[in-house]
Every structure is written in structure tokens, then in C-alpha cells.
Length: 406
Image (cartoon, rainbow, N blue to C red; front, side, top):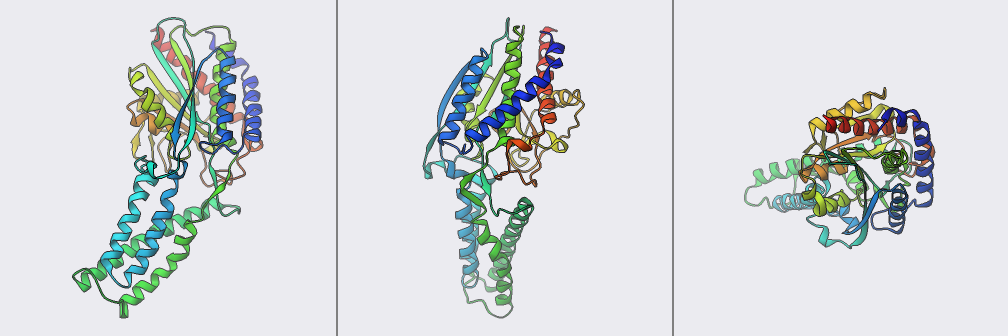
């Protein structure tokens, strides 16, 4: 295949990405996990990819959307009760903090499905599309992105993400303060720390009032009724991946030894549930050393372009060799990118945790006014960045094909 020819007309793919992103964002906007719009988006992408000649499969899976942030209510209520208990029984206060931290860690930090059975279930969908190669498969690459969009953050003000970060930090500091006060008072009183707080211990407890507004505010940070259009997060990644399949298919040639695929997951915003469901069903088929997974998530802010080497709040290590390949592919376009990790998670964490070779490409500024807000619309996307990401994806395929011919 002549990759140089494909790269000469990338402006056409850029317009395709921007046009289709705008159409999907506006016409299938409320794509919350398990909702009608998410299902419509899965059908729309499936149809588009099938028309390109890709073998396309839709798979349903059960999802508990509320599990993603359901822990917030439990954790905050336990913390508030722990604050009250401080003034009476330190042991009870410590126990309530511990109970509140369990869902915070299990659901909020680790994104575990351990408590999903406690929540109402809906049906979400994954779409997998594959372009077969001409001969023996020596390399295979899946570009992955997610179909669903996120519920927006409150309050509806400019710079809300910095405000939310401050509230979250204050909440955590408050919990640490309360825990330390409990332990100190418990040690002072002995036994189980029973006794009405008085004198200096009363003052220590009353100081904790400064954290109450942050704890209560945390209950209302997420608007469960309003969903972002998700143009950047993550229709940008979905349509870059789809444009790649379309461009290769329209070239009229099949790659000799490299299979190219797309995985579009549902329910990513509620704990990577779609990617985890896909791995449950298929991971064992692709631990062959031939297959790599490149997640494209929130391709919006050029200065934030990054090839992540760690995911899931820095807890999951991604494939270092693949990260080098993708970084090189991006830099060949003239774009600059960094490495490392960060807070949050992408589908790459689910693939890597399942023993697959995965890496994540993001261009995300978490403090922007578009991240998980109603302002994540297509008219604010960077077409040049999306074109660079499309060319970088072509570069990845070209390099894998070159390796397959050696």
C-alpha cells in the first residue's frame, strides 16, 4: 500500500472527521451509558464502518451507570456522620470514615465493578470493526475510543474545573484532618474514645466546620440529568479511528500483513465498563504478541497532546514499546507530544489490565471549560490537531506493516 498517497489528501479526512463529529454530537447528544442516544451512535458508526467494507460486530453488555459516581453519596454521608460522631465516640467516627473510604477507593479510584450489582442495570453496546489483510496476519492494531458522553459538572460557571479541583482537595484534607483528630482524641480518652468533646477537643472539632461546605457541595458536583455533547470526549477519537478505516478501504488496496481494526466502547464514562466487557469476551483471543491497542481519547487541546505510559490514576502501566512507536508516529507529523500519566483513566487501562499491549493518546486539559461540560461541542474542535492525529494513526499502521515485511 502506498501510504504517501494516503497522506497527500488528509484534508479530506479532516473534513470528514469534523463533519461527522458535528452531526453525531448534535443529533445523538445525550449519549449517557445505556441510553437511546448511545445506542443510536453505535448503530450509526456500525453502518458507516460496514459501508467501508469492514467486518463489523455490535455486542451488548449490562452496565450499571450509577456505579461510576454512586460512591460519592455514600462517602459524603459517612463523612458527615463521622464528623458528628467525633463529638461523642471516636471509634464510631473512625469506623464511619473507613466505611466511607471503601467505595471511594473501590469505585472511585480503582473503577472496580465489585459493587455494580447494587445498582440499576441498563444495556450498553460495543462496536468492533476489522479490515482484513491480504495475507498472513503478522501485526494487528485496534484503535479504540468511546461512544458515550459524560454527565456535566456543576456549577455552571467559567473556570468550574479549577473550582471543583479545589473542592475535591478540600474534601480530602478535611477527611484527613477529621481522622487525625479522631485518633488523637481516642488516644487521649482511651477505651473506645467515649466522652462528650469539651475544652480543647471541642475546639478541634469545631475547626472541622470549615470543611462542611466542601463535603456537602460534593454531593451536587455532578448533574445527573444533563449530558455533555462529548464532541471532544470522545467523538473526536471515534471519528479519527473511523476515518482511518475509511481512508484505507477507499484506497482499493488491502494491507499485506497488517490487520487494522476499530473498537468503539460504550459506558466508558462510568468506569471503563465497555472496554472491560470487551476484554471479558475477547482478550484471550489477542494475547498473541501480534496485537496492539491504541486508545484515542479527547483529542482537543494541542498543547496537551500526550502518549500516556501510565493510566488509571497512575496505577496501571501501559506498554512502553508501543508508546515509543506511537510517540514517533505523532512527531513525524510535526506535532509535539509528551509522555507520562495523570489522574483519571482511559480504556487503555482496561486493555492493559487484561494483559494486552495498550497505550493511550490524549489531548486533554482537565481545567478547560469544555471538559465534562455542556461546552464540549464540535465547533470548538481543533481541525489541525485531528488531522495530525489521523496522520499519526496512518504512521502507526505504516510502521507495523513495515515490520511485518521484514
